[in-house]
Image (cartoon, rainbow over all chains, first blue to last red):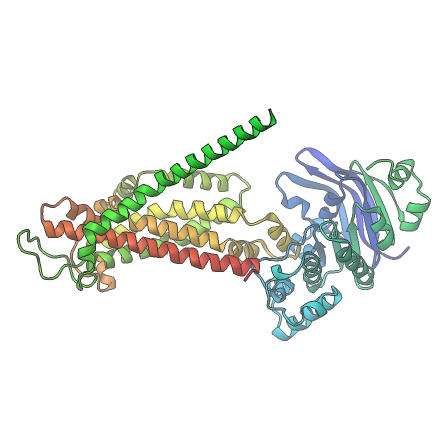
Length: 251
Length: 296
């Protein structure tokens, strides 16, 4: 197994007094794609939102346990700094509606520190190229982000996350609001992103997990049922629950 | 049987349409009538050459006076509403940010509840409050345009707070989460992403408050009094000032025919000014919204 980037250790996340996920321990390998699958409401999104401390920003939500990024517990660090190292792409494309394409991608750089215009320009171009959007927008980076199609907006959000130069990229069902063509573009992109980033992707689509992920975790009712190499999990599941889920008997 | 049900539905649909049309008439009639009456009585005065430049005339009920004008009152209203806007916009917007974006701990909730209650308080009470708490304590403020501006700002603050809070709430949470996930600090996110996204709504609220303050007479009567001196420098804030609503209130109750005409002219002017601001602001907000949504 590849070196570990992110360790989840006995993590329980609550909404009020009710745990949405309980006692999850899991290791995400460096520069690999790990998929988190499971039926609706199993806690996939809650889990991924604990990894950049977004869960706790909701009212009455709190977390117990540890998430260790390169030997440091992120819950002992400043959450704003954690989020600069762990980027996120959401279920629905959420570009900043008041901003142009360029301003969206450069948002983190412009708001979080002092960078020269030249530096910012380069980072914007690099991120748009990495997100496979550059060729489509290079002539109109100053047009509003909302002038893009849904699939393009999602790739814009990926570029925006990458421009912040994160080490880990979290993707919360990034294709669920997209059509099949846009979906396949994003999937292709995920395959390339793992060369530079540790990618963790939540998906309700098992085929997608099988296509893009090196490792897969199966969650059910807030508990981690099984975790392993994607091939093993889909072809030789160890748990009967996993087997019935991937063969479509429930969920 | 089937036909009957269709016929009944159609009849019901037509009845509701007619009723809806009647309510439109009921809503529009007073507005049209007010504008019409104001034109009939004030039109003649409004189009006199000196109306916007001369001072209020002395009463002359038999012969008409040479120069009729409401210049000091336009200036006074603009100066006091301007001062009130300078005070109330920052306070109202900050209070709204507190109420909408920093809601935890109950303090934000208290702010929005207070703004709700305050915006229902009669304006004369607001004027009396400013008079009782600020003006009486500082004799230098008695009967000055400064205290008039303060009284109008007391009316504007809750309006700006409520409308801004509502505008901030319409910004989808996904915008906030996108910014948080990029490691953007909360205050930068609030000011440069959430507030900017809500700007059309905030501008609407500010203009609404300005229009409301422009038409208020009661809080000015208790704080500024009335004056026919031109508002020609910043030092004019230290003395009584004229204003359109107080002019209308004073002159409409007078027995002099030229003062009555002047009051009608001021009514018409105020109506037209508010109409223009309203239309302009709608245009600006439309442009802003179109720009944001990427349409053409």
